[in-house]
Length: 101
Length: 396
Image (cartoon, each protein chain N blue to C red):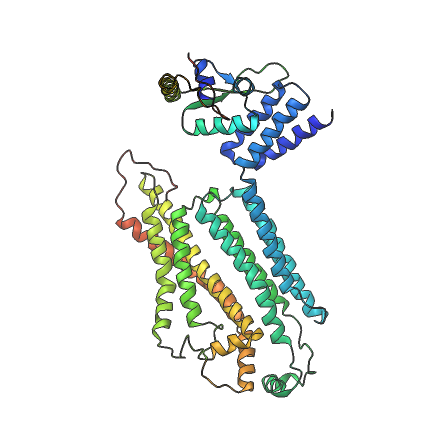
């Protein structure tokens, strides 16, 4: 999730798009977003001007602290891949591939 | 399938209220985002994820567990307190009324308080509420046992002769019958006291009451100590009969002296500590008012918990004494009482249950006065907060 947000750090992103990017279901994605927001890594806000006939959407983006953490995580991940050229990075639920901005 | 989406949406909107206020935005976000998901199964799956979030973040398992536990405890207490079919209609009606009204109070007052003053927001508040509700539930069957014992005329033998001696002015009752009628005035007073206790505890532990968790914890502990000492002094109501191994019947027993000291000092100390520990505004007037409120609450909770503790334990012991020879032997250990004396004491103990109603009224009044005095002392001795220090009213 961090990597997906880090891919477009200045843009506010929607939950559904993040779910598509990460392949996570809503019941998994949102608890992760909540924990990231609790730790001050992600900021959230409501859309100010919703599309006509649609409810306001909740938007997310990384905070400055989140950006630093995501950059550090991406760096550490790429370093570990370099150290083990034959090994592919382990992926699991909620762990996206490291994104390079 | 077409009806499933709107139904799921409506259910989800209703379920949002189950979430804590701080998390409600997130559940709303999932529901709003569902509009962007293609209709059909994908949208339904998205909303199912929202339901999982509500269940997890709203701590549904804990809530359902508490609800089931509360309902089971209430059912057990009602079953134990419900009068048997052999009980005359007048007595039965009083006992049934007791059970129905008490359970209604326990079911409705928490909802009303939540609506008016908000939910409890600390562990101390939740424990205090649970303890108060458990005490009220425990009193219900114990009181039913003592009430029936007082009214029941023994079937014969020494018990009947003892009963006749004690009730000689009322004519000779029929053995095995139930004498007199229920004291409706007394029942109403007891229900009123129960309602007041529940309402006050619920109100003081609600979020908007702004009583700090530290105040609740300190005063509840002080109240428990007071209640246990009072119970040790008077395990069977206001009787002055010796009940080994507790009290030896002496008015100057150190335990009696300790009970009197605690009655006044426990709420005083709780009030002083609560006043000292709470964060107060810079303005001296507001600081005094904030400390006074914490002291008032501490005194009330301290002696209220004390009164409730001694009442539960006292009425419970009396009821157990009536039902169990083992408890009778434990209470009057080594006294070698005659059957008549044992029955007389049982009758006295059952009649003395009203003593606890008096305790439940007087103790909190003493408590709130002493708590206010204690907080006043804290006001005098506490240093003024330095500039820039947090000035929130909620502390602990």
